[in-house]
Image (cartoon, rainbow, N blue to C red):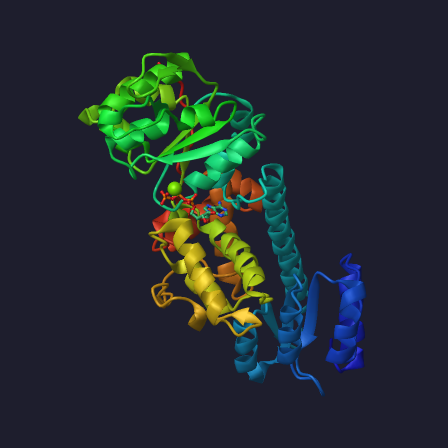
Length: 457
Ligand SMILES: Nc1ncnc2c1ncn2[C@@H]1O[C@H](COP(=O)(O)OP(=O)(O)OP(=O)(O)O)[C@@H](O)[C@H]1O
Ligand SMILES: [Mg+2]
C-alpha cells in the first residue's frame, strides 16, 4: 500500500516478475477491504499515508488475527517510526527509495518464515488430533507420549500405575482409561488409600464378615465386589499398609480374596488402576512397599510430567478452563490479554494443572471481560520477570517468533537438532548457535521425560 501511484505500480511490477500474485491499494482503508478476499501472505505498506497511517493499519491487521507478515517502508529520515512498527509486530522495514534486490530478499525470507510457521502449526494440530481424548488437554510432545498409548492401555485389562506430581491429572487419566475401555459401562470406583486407617481401609476394599466384637454388625461388601466387571482406582497406593498389600497382591494374581474376618474365597473381575505421587520404586528399595505388589501394579506405567516440563500445554489448558468456568459463571470471555498470557506462560506451576485450574477459576470470577487481564489472575501467579529469555507469544518481534519456532520444534523432535533443522529448513549450525544465544532460557523448555510402559519381571 502506498499513496504514490507510480511507486505502487513499479513495486507491483517487480514483485509480479518475482512470481508473486500482487494486489495494490491506494490507502489503508482500501487495503483492509481487500484482506478478506485476497488473503495475502505478506503486506507491504508505506508508513506515512493520508487517513490511516501504516502503524494503525498494522494494529488492525494483527488485531484481526491475520497470520501474515507486514513489511513497512519508510523515508530514511523516519527510522524511529519504523522501529515502533517493529515493536508492534512488523516483520521488517525498508527505507525509501526501495532497493528492489533488498526487497525481493526480504519478501522471500518472510514467505519462508510464514510457511515454516504454518507447517509447524499444522504438524502440531495433526498430532493433537490423532491422540485426542475429549477432556484430556495436552498437545505437548510429553503429553502426546502418554496419550498415544492410551488406546492400547484402555483396551487391555492390565493393571496400570499412574505416577506424577500432585495435580498433574492422575485421576483424570485413570477415569479416561476406564471410559475408553470395554468396561466403560461397568462401575468405576475409587478408593483413597491414605484417607482411611488400616481396619477401615481393609473392609472398604475387601469387605468384612459380621463381627459384633469389632463393632461390625453386618456383613459388608467391599469395593472389589462392588466394582465387579469394572475398574477400581486406588489413589495414593503407597499409603496401603503391609497386611493389605499382601491381600492385594493375591487379588491381582488370582482375582481371589476373602472378606476381612471371613474364610470364604470370593472372585471378582476387576481391573485395577493405581496412582502415586511418590516414587514407588524407591519405596520398594526402602522396604516400605512390597516388590511383588509393585510389579503386579506396574504392568503399565504412565508417568504424567509436571506442567513446567510441558510449557506448550499451559495456554491450551488455560483456555479449556476458561471455557469451563466461563460457562459455569455465565460469562463469555474471549481469552487472555497478552500480559496475562505472558504470566501464565512464565510461571512455574508447582501445583501443576490443579493450580492452573484454580487460577483460571479465580480469574473468571474477577474478570469483567472481554478478556481476562493480568490483574484478574491470583497474585501468586507473579509478574513475568523482565528481561528473561522466556518464550513469548509469537506476533511480537521476529527474534521472538524465531525462538518460539526453534524451541517448540525442538520440543516436538525431542531435542534432536538435526530433525528440527529439517523441519525448519535451517542449518543445524544455526540452530546450535541460536541455542547458545538462548542459553539463559529456562531449562524446563527442553526437558523431556520419557514414558515407557514397563513389563513385570
Ligand atoms: N490434561 C488435562 N486436561 C484437562 N484437565 C486436566 C488435565 N490434567 C489435570 N486436569 C484437571 O486438573 C485437576 C487436577 O487433576 P487430578 O485430580 O486428576 O490430579 P491428580 O494427579 O490426581 O492430583 P493429586 O495427586 O493431587 O490427587 C482436575 O480438575 C483435572 O480435571
Ligand atoms: Mg488425585
